[in-house]
Length: 463
Image (cartoon, helix red, strand yellow):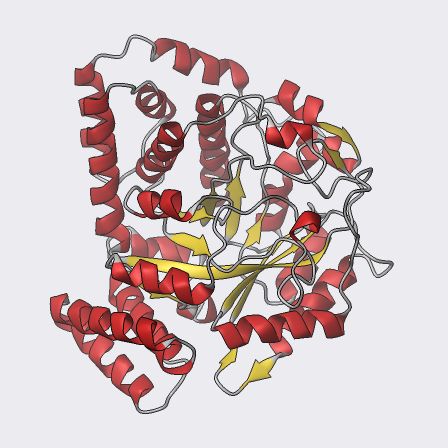
């Protein structure tokens, strides 16, 4: 099955939808936005209409609708995590990536388990609770076992006030049996990006290694979900092809997963091409995405798949990240390094791509809190089995808020007590009190109880 053409990505239908949306009237846009406000998702033609928006007036309505949907579903919570690159070894030749096999301009490393433990210790002492494990698509002689051992190492590192409570994984596509082994390692979300859904563009930029096989990659989430991994993350690398095509093709992928497995992706990532060491393509994207179109992408995705998390990395500047919080972003990385060993000793030249936001975790948290957003380190849903369809069953009627809002505040309070600078403590405590005051009923009772338990010296409390 997984060697055949992935016919659920139907390029002809994508182009037809985009062609039909060319002469969209403002009335049609307003109708789609009204439908989006019902938070039941959008179909391919709806999304095509939203991609056609160009006037300042319609953009403002798009952004306002996305903000209202995001606030209704997620409130003011913003989840934080850090990527942990354990290896930049790679057998592929992806022209936009510094890790590509023939690039001699970077130092190659596959961290030992002892070195991984030291990196994790640095992240824990900063206050992190979530890690995204990332590796180039080649491993030391242990093969997949290297990744599995690394996940165990991450979970095993403990300190007085911290440990990593959730390890998400971004590694090369696996067989179904290998995905079963990955699930048994107690990972959270499995994340994989198609990079571009446009087959001809995919072929042009992937010129060596197993990643050349478009179908093997695009079927990977089917194999992961068949193996029992019910939280998966998708994304494209915006800039490789027309962003309008990419959004609609990604919608086809999402619809396919929902049809086959009853639930779509848990997260969507929106990386935009950034310069990478010794890569001319990365510095000159074939289809550059402007800042306004990038904001539009985030807003459209929030309306198209309202209950799916949207992840913004430190590829983007602090300003762009801040602007997209209101448009749909619900998860961000902070204090990131993209080279193996970078938390102990940074070497940005050997990173996968250039960073746009160099602030520390504490600085990011202080700025986020100053904007009225609640930094969350909560991992309760994953540890209590509220994943996949079970999560959506709570999210769609709005019941998940009774857990998420109190848990966000308690995890934020834990950070403030154990890791934050004095300036961040002041800003954070004011936000916690304000947030509790604005809550009602059960959510407020739970939040007050959990925060008091943290204040009394308890860590890792949740409902």
